[in-house]
Length: 105
Image 1 (cartoon, rainbow, N blue to C red):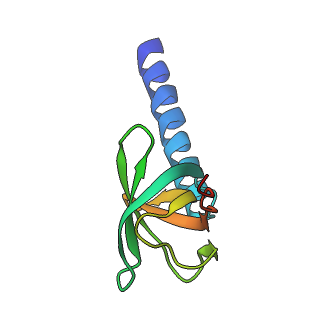
Image 2: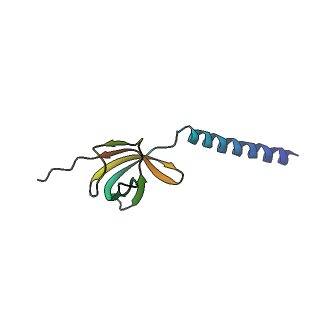
């Protein structure tokens, strides 16, 4: 009897955790990730870019009309810093900041 009660309590706890995670996601409180790197390619019509960080890892990032574009739309070869959330399995930018190019010496 104790096992059944314990399993029922565990199941209720798991379901409550899943429900609160879904509620948080629906309220727009997704975890924000920050990426910094070089834009490898851009598709402005689909609002998608491929970002390569300093370790060589590539991340596909999309943006929409609610994304804050600081420094204009990103272009290939530019250094950028991106704040993004995972939404429906995609990385969606909330902010894209084009970083100033370092002056030549």
